Length: 301
Image (cartoon, rainbow, N blue to C red):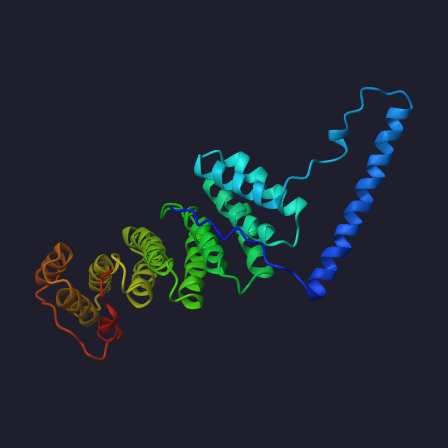
């Protein structure tokens, strides 16, 4: 991923915000003076080993710290990059460089795998700077951080839901941003994970002949995740479950919808054979929920 280098020119801050900065600056100077006085008093008392650097942090220019952070980030020295960006935020609060450093800190933590910290920083950024040019990037970092935590389908899929919600914000809020296409791709993947979870549970019920529980899960895949790869198998499993319950019209409709949307599917061939074994064939009942859901099916296209 290319790291954006934001403009190096700090904006002039005036008005109420400028007044607040001046107050904060005076307070910081006063605090430093007190600490320095205490340190010097220690020296005067005869303690020649006092290290003033322990009491007074050296202040580097904001642009120097920020650019050093970028250089460390690009070189893969993530811990050092984090320190530099944090120093900007600490030493030069309310400045343009502090703003830029906050979003870069979020990205650095994402790169380090500190996803919760990355999410926290990106949310803080969007709370403080909701209309900035980098707000889309911050939302995208939140989405990426949730996305990287998506587990396999055998486990709870809360991260998938959070990733979808975060990436959808990128799509809805910033439809022209450079992150939209990747956000959409990751939404499709996360939705496929949710559908896969339903399929896993549905198969569990089907194997135990708990057909109503299985049908509920497979139906959810068809109705809620019709544009995922899972819908093909879901229709075949519905054919199997309905057939086992003796609901032949629904079984025939499920097979017919499967054949209409996936005519070359191995799942359709299996469903066709199953119905033939009972002297039936695929036939769509246009009054069935399956027939109504058929128009939504894209199979992950």
